[in-house]
Image (cartoon, rainbow, N blue to C red; front, side, top):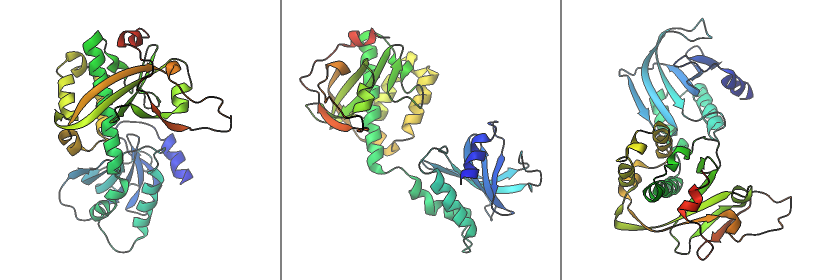
Length: 304
């Protein structure tokens, strides 16, 4: 596994170029293309070229492959492959490699397509997490729209700008984290180190409730995209697409919500715990924000 990962990390990132990572047999192996690992197998009777997508996997059948960059003995022909959409730091990367390796050793003559359908559920995000992701994105988009309508400032330029960012928005001097809750008292979950590792973090709280007369996430996206500053912003559209991959399309189109209130706070104004021993870390707790000092949108965006 370590050797395969090392080869994965060292492989050149050339568009649509296939590199061998590990050969399992004369007709099967692990490859990398466009920074994604593929399990490739000689076509086992599939007559149609097709692609089936899930959250973390995709199956592509009957693809003609003529060469592999670092494998001069590769036999050209038609192949099927399963692609893992995550990178090597994804928690499911090792599981994908292990279960495909077991498939090679299996003697049941299961087709790759049948194998793909048998493992799909292993690599899908739990429904509960998809719902949490929906609420998070809903709250963040509500704030983008609210700030723009009140001030004319487009904070979407700093929305998930980098995948490594630990805050929802980083734009100029503005560092903003959003929490979405159904609690009237704005009871939200706080990661202490995230909120208090610096003195200039702002916290937005969006209180929502389910309502048959409300709007869906897709409704909100359509509203935002009627504004050219958003619809023609490439970075925003890429970030939006990445977030939507983590959400159930059915829930995005069917679940309806109303906004009850939106409040903004500065971390230094929020009552919290103190004198934390050095040997404690990753502290998470719930905090009731209602009644604590708020800041205006104008004050907040002055940091940009």
